[in-house]
Length: 133
Image (cartoon, rainbow, N blue to C red; front, side):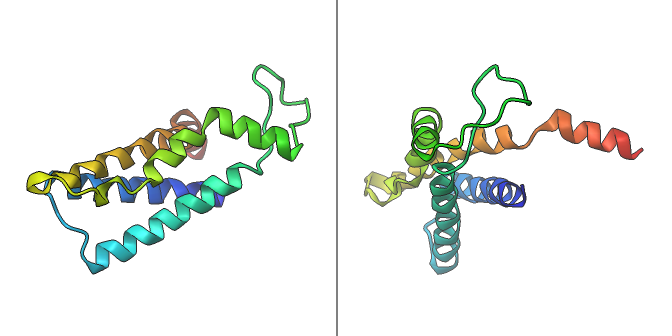
């Protein structure tokens, strides 16, 4: 749970930085480059852990046990979310283009926002806030 929150925060923060780099055509200087490497390492670890996570079959109740076979879990992740995690990890921005347009490839990394919003369950958070008050 805490790792998912950490990944979601990294996703939001890195997406903001990547969008700014694409919009203002900023180059990755030393600080941004090291920060980008840290973010990419977090996303690689997240991607690798998803190959090992158990899952529940679609339409099954919460009382049914989750699937724990590693091969089935890996195949499930490969079919459902692997490409959404792999494509933003490819460093397209190193491809040189005319007039600094290679920075526009940072927008590909915004694909991670889909996963971040999927983890960030707004109705559940609103229910928690409602229960607090």
